[in-house]
Amino acid sequence: MAEKSKVYFADFRCPSWRENLPQKLARLMMTAGFGEIDMEDKYVAVKMHFGEPGNLAYLRPNWAKAVADLVKSQGGKPFLTDCNTLYVGGRKNALDHIESAYVNGFTPYSTGCHVIIADGLKGTDEVCVPVEGGEYVKEAKIGRAVMDADVFVSLTHFKGHEQAGMGGALKNIGMGCGSRAGKMEQHNSGKPFVKEKKCIGCKACAKICAHGAPQFGPDGKASIDMDKCVGCGRCLAVCPKDAIDCLYDEAPTILNKKIAEYTKAVVDGRPCFHVSLVLDISPNCDCHGENDVPIAADVGMFASFDPVALDQACADAVLAQPVAPNSALTDVNCDCGTDYFKAAHPDTDWETCLEHAEKLGLGVRQYELVKI
Image (cartoon, rainbow, N blue to C red; front, side, top):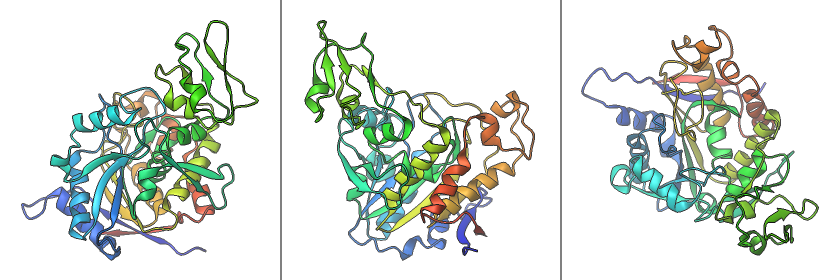
């Protein structure tokens, strides 16, 4: 049997004036071994989600500041980062993405460090990273700034997810660090297509395509030759009218395996550390421009060098809570003792991600919970 990984836990109680929650998070991280990482003059990527405008469940900037300050205390150079979204919203390009981050409070003045969108202005600045042992992904398309960092830290808002089932550290890293083309590879089982009503015939897609896949009819509208298309997604990133889209039709099991394989591409070969905050446990991703009632009560903060054990510990902690009243779980008459994530989204399969990540050597699901 594999040796258990240590996952460190602290609740949200601060009954006296001696310590506040950011200080408690810093103490948790240092107890978990964060100070053992050599950060002197190193670039440290802090991967998190800045929240889609309109969403209020995302992590407050105060949490990011606690992590950034701790990195700086260890001699590191932190920056907050995420990659552009595949869908059309407030974070599909770097300018809108940074604006959304600032509007939601993630300014250099509130967090103590800068925001860098890892895959660049249009989501095309990526590094193709080999995935050792990858079953579905041989080369992951990862945002360049993530791969340029010397140290990688994930700061995750643990929650439900409408496609992956659960939005934990693996989801934050694997899907979150994928460029727009990388996200398409994970979400889509096929290739992109053109919404002709939106197409203006600018031929930006043809200029970026190395395979001659975009074709143009007598009306100047684009279509994609599926025999020539390799599914790289670059046309999707450069289209000025969002006329190119994908189907988001990957099977839940395969989607979760791809997330695990993208995570492996990100974390292999450098120091990594992972923090998950289990609060405001919304049923859906923070990519939504809204958020529903939490499905369970706030639990606490978790930290580990092992993202697989961390996700398992967070999931177990949520599933041990009573069902929150007037939530998505009460809508489906969910009882305690059932899988809340599958109850909220019956077609999802979150455990597959953890199982596949363990198979890839990212960590183990067996853990020892150390309370501080």
